[in-house]
Amino acid sequence: MNKRGLVCIAAGLALVLAAGCLTGYNVVEEKQAGENAEEALGLLRTVSIKPGELEIPEGLPQPFEVDPQVQMSEIEIDGHRYVGFLSIPSLELDLPVMSEWSYPNMKTAPCRYWGSVYLDNMVICAHNYVNHFGRLGNVSIGDPVIFTDVDGNVFNYTVSELIQLNPNQTLNMVKGLDWDLTLFTCTTSGRQRLTVRCVRAEESAT
Picture 1 (tube, helix red, strand yellow):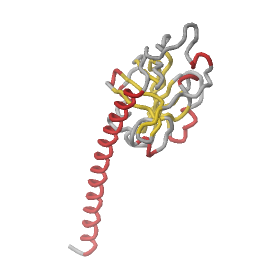
Picture 2 (cartoon, one colour):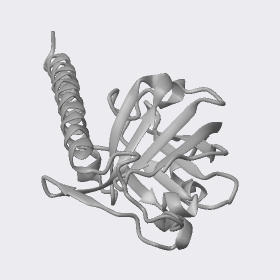
Picture 3 (tube, helix red, strand yellow):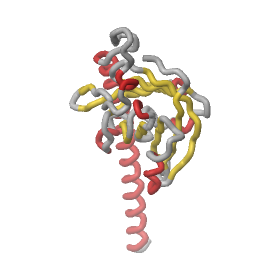
Picture 4 (cartoon, helix red, strand yellow):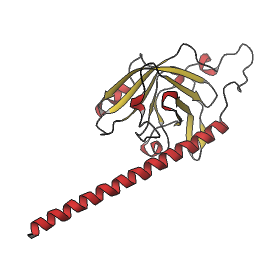
């Protein structure tokens, strides 16, 4: 075999090795992300107000009913700030939601990308880790989605639409009044954004 052939074989082996290392790194990162989210969720449920525990004087409505512009309450856990947690029963998925999105934050938990549940325009993003939004594409139209803020207010939604958007269509995540809650993540290829639109159910508990 000539020298050029040996170089090609060596290059091929290097690529295989690199791919193997990358796959191993992704598996470790995904496992760590799942553990981070589970730990944060446990702490969040411990320190946040549970539904029914918030004592409101008679005749006084909940804060989001008084002024929808009020900022969502936050709780700090291990240096991260959270606004509540998200439940998708059909996926048996419960996840904490951070107040602000960033790539480092998303390695721990889903993040609020935009908006507020009080304004019916919140957008939540997450990596496609299997323990985060990796199974988001398995939801069906009509499935319930629940968001509980750190003050114990429970917001019920139903899935109304599943679509895929291109990365350059980011503004489509936040515009429009037809959806009260949007969830999105990257597709497996990373070329598109799997987007789940939800509308508020008629009743939400407080």
